Length: 156
Ligand code: HEM
Image (tube, rainbow, N blue to C red):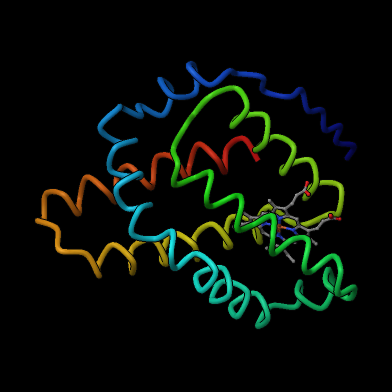
């Protein structure tokens, strides 16, 4: 049987995406508050994420070149810094599209990209657990982080 796969890029803009994922100003506030706490730990968080990636076959497959590894690590730190700044505008959306294109170009599976996001989600939760928040604030923060992570992953 013949399958023809066609893809037409989804070009929704920042405002439409924000509405689609029901992201409110309160969500941005919760992400930025968590971000203030996470920023000093960012290098360590990305390092922990790469420790996870090292246990996967994709690490050897994609990072045979030391320079590519350094580039990807540096860019990933910038990625999460942008995430916790939570300024969802056209520039943000465009940067996520470019990152999606990069990973598509190198042939990384969506399974691995999603898994990577899921591991970072866990790191967000661990950071949040170190803060003194009420249960209500914790739930709101998790919800806000999840929404923006889903939006990002959807674009990528
Ligand atoms: C949480 C999920 C991930 C995020 C947020 C992320 C983020 C990024 C960013 C921001 C870049 C730079 C893109 C550019 O220069 O255009 C990049 C490059 C790269 N990423 Fe990822 N990445 C993720 C998952 C992965 C995984 C699972 C792999 C598997 C090995 C991977 C391998 C690479 C490689 C090889 C590059 C360099 C590509 C090149 O410049 O040729 N990434 N990543």
